[in-house]
Image 1 (tube, rainbow, N blue to C red):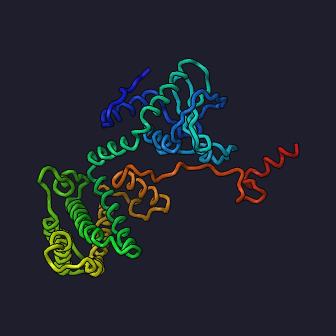
Image 2 (image 1 turned 180 degrees about the horizontal axis):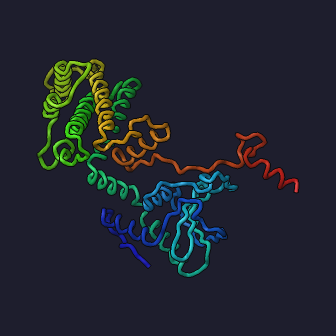
Image 3 (image 1 turned 90 degrees about the vertical axis):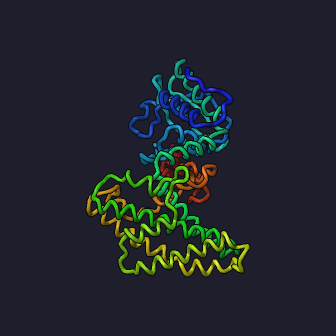
Length: 374
């Protein structure tokens, strides 16, 4: 049976080791048709750890999005005690891991052979020995993924800045602070959108699907070699096409905004600059961001039209509410704060609840009425 090094500090090597042990011993079943035909489960182990954290840890190990197999098939599971369950396949049978009323987690099997029992002890050990370090695992693993995928990191950073910018403005309305963060984020957003605009412009000009040559210059900072904001302003002014707005006026205002940001950050204590001035600065210059978004939309559509670059046609259509929520949750967990669990384990539909007429879910009411009549 595979074992894991005990009492070692969380690091990428240990995370990959645990994931490899999981992958070599278990297959997460997320297809209803692959479930065992005869379900005769016997509970053989319990885990007295936070069920919510175990849910996310299992999703982390499997590297697959959790699916409620019964709900996906349109079946209402007649059990109000279970919120979620993971079904794992081994060479010796199936293992079912599920929560019980949010108090603890049970592990059951569909066979009683000794080899399968060993697999149960293995998965139980993996969970119990590592669940307390799960959030640290996620932080380390996420940072490595972001480092390996610079464009993905860039896009997540962009969206996270947009979220934080809007949040800072809302926070100021309620609590009278957040303006300095908003000003810094506004300048950073303009720099970010300009970098992306430069990338799209170059792709469309070269008419190529290859973009690797632009990564080191636009998206990476190694040692002290990188393009500053002023450098990006200059390159964008030379390369990016502006339509419907004066490029000269745009970059004049961008540089004014940059100077205001520097005054608020670097010269706040040595000038008569007042914090409240930031509010007017943001209101005066935030339209620069919207101008750039319009330019980006044109460049993205041009890229799809030419059939070059990395964008697909369906990526230009607005995302559904569900897709938007999932995207934001992913960004919150990876780029912003991996210590915060923002997703909730998807709960099954209640069978008995005061919110239903007669206290029974109408979808299964007939089942219980017929059973009572018998």
